[in-house]
Length: 306
Image (tube, rainbow, N blue to C red; front, side, top):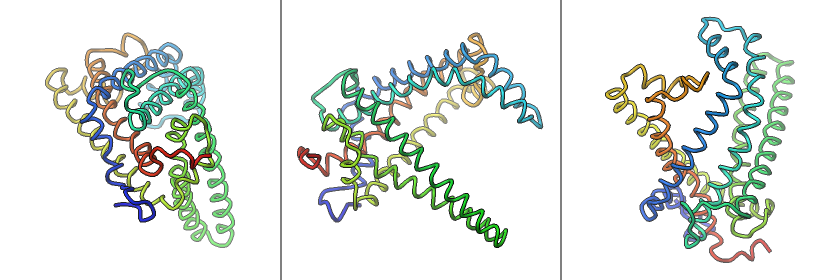
């Protein structure tokens, strides 16, 4: 599938670009896997250290046949300090990865550790991610409020009509958010390429190309999910033979983050390592289509942003 307005623009080529990069530059995924594992372990330690007791109580209450929401709510509030500590770590991590994804596509000769570096590009990526998040949150709140008001008005006429309108409004809101996310998808590669955050110009560059971009991103997400599912399934098969079914299932489905002694049993350590390897692959698959499409459209001509 290609865009009729831009010769050479291919959703299929961009959607599968991550596999090509993994084949041509195989050292990228071990580096990303190491970074992913380091961040995962760090965030797990912070969760256990800052919110271990609350997590233990939440786990115990959740096992009840009829958990009391009023009892769970204050416990979830106790997770706040841990989440505040983890948020900047994730922001920095994804800023580095998004910069690396653009670097490996737009500036492949500028090698670092898996094309990851720490510098101005990463700072700008972090700021761009914050800006995109705020825009998406604002759009989400706007469409949810609009959908609720529309459903309430329709409900005054007929409860059945109100329910139908509410469902349709929700679907429209979801479609609208996906549309906005696609229109913002060039902010990251454009910020890397031009050295400045210009949301309006990046938004304009996606005009008339939403269908092609959607196809590429959908293909990459489906491929990443398939790799993740196969990877998890492979760990289950091997883990059952090495650690037993119960320990393997607990490591994958219900890790015990209530204390440091229960956080890292052998099965969980093995799963952390394996999931980091899989994450290194899926991240490359999911993050490289946008800079690939950007390169197909702009090439070396950055005058479109002047």
